[in-house]
Image (cartoon, rainbow, N blue to C red; front, side, top):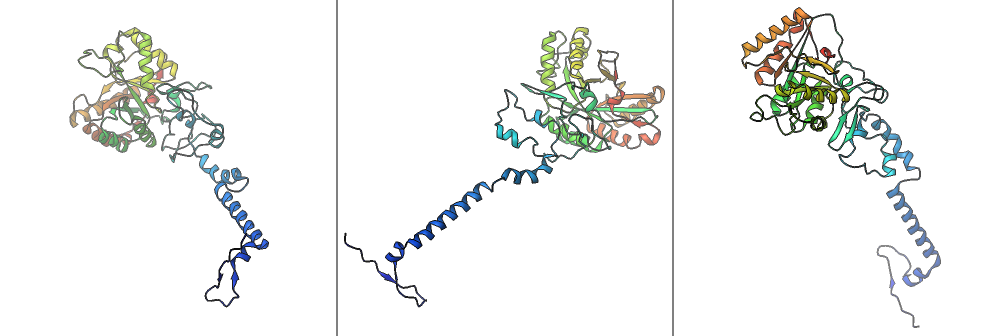
Length: 377
């Protein structure tokens, strides 16, 4: 084969002897050095992509402090609405402690333990061990040790011997402005109740609990003038079969987590039916919840923690009338040692309650969460 004559080249700027490219390429030493450099480059690239050996230990150390801040209940919260969770084994191994959602709150030292409360935010929901998944979402349950959602989601309270005055402000979640006003301007001892159909319900409940408010979930119940006055598609009906009542109630309960009990929205006809109320109370009892009503269900028991408001403070929407009802609430507490009132999140109601609550304890009363007035009966 005829040899191909390659040109002789000179490197500009350097006084070097002419280099024959052909001889350089055919030099075994040059080929060996080139191969070694290529191999070293490949090794560097692999380490850059995969990391050094023992990478699991390398990544575990800095992530441990973050994982320790994960809130209780995260496993339940991450379950899909339907079917089993699709988690690969490696993901389970790497996610044994999930990343924190950055919500600061007191946390129990052991799973499901009662949190230490210092007067500020209530622990984020769901608390581990007090819910189970369902097709519609999480449902409250009684924990294995017998503690109930009514206990762990209520605002902690210690009586000081003074007459106790409690208020429930309802209708929250539908109007963002008044809902935010109630959460921000009312003291944390005021119990807030939320409409189950509210958009962003869990977010509102989380915000309320972060400000120290315990929460009730409003249960639409059949009024006397139904269906002219229709509380919505999941209204509990007085003549509904017990199974129908339970299914509707489970849908209601599955819409959020973090409430210690239920309250009624309307419901004079439903609560007036012994059979309907028994089916409702049985389901509430099995879930470990309380029931606080606006006075419509006064005297009803059911083996559940119960409280009934003795007056609605804003049945007349005027500042003078609301002031009068709040004064009457104080008088009732002075006579009987405690009193519970209820109201709606009207702007005038929120304004008057905020002003009243700011000074009620100076008059010798103890502002009290509604859960502290419930009695199992």
